[in-house]
Image 1 (cartoon, rainbow, N blue to C red):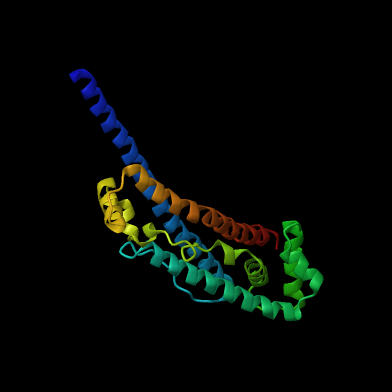
Image 2 (cartoon, one colour):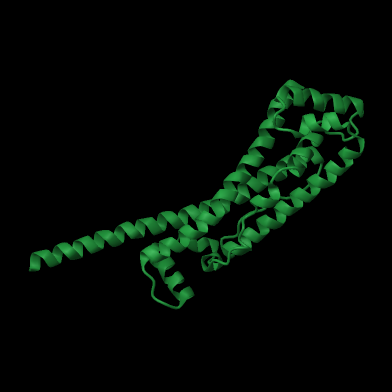
Length: 228
């Protein structure tokens, strides 16, 4: 009898270690995605400062604020990026030939042709915008899916989002305690992990799509700068 009891307690301990690891892995992943949102946003701010002649300062995550508050700052900054791009695009639309606009805007057009279109537009308008890349960046961002890739923390009322960002890098015991206080009931590790996983599944897809949008704009600028 003794033998089987000690095996059971060893197994339980091992089981809870596995769940501990899963919880820690999940919270670190969630932490990573919140931070990644900031990194991508800052990449876009650099592009906008460079090509639009703006002077926006970097945004940074605040570990002492809630995940939701951090995401709200990202959402706000993304709205601003979209607004500035649309404002510039409006100016371009007033003076650009529709065929040329299509060449710059549409994905099916080779980068070489895009480069030529941008060069022509710049020459034709005698660099009215100063920066040769401004039309490219403005058009690409204005027509991108930026609006739909913001961290959807407003639409999803997940209690875990009110944890401080810094809480996500604590020990699993502290995290469990925080989640337990939050729900005012005892939870087990697998439930806690599920709560974190739910938040990841809300943040990861739009964050990946956001990264793709920023990456595409960056790649376009780089390739075209080599062809101009």
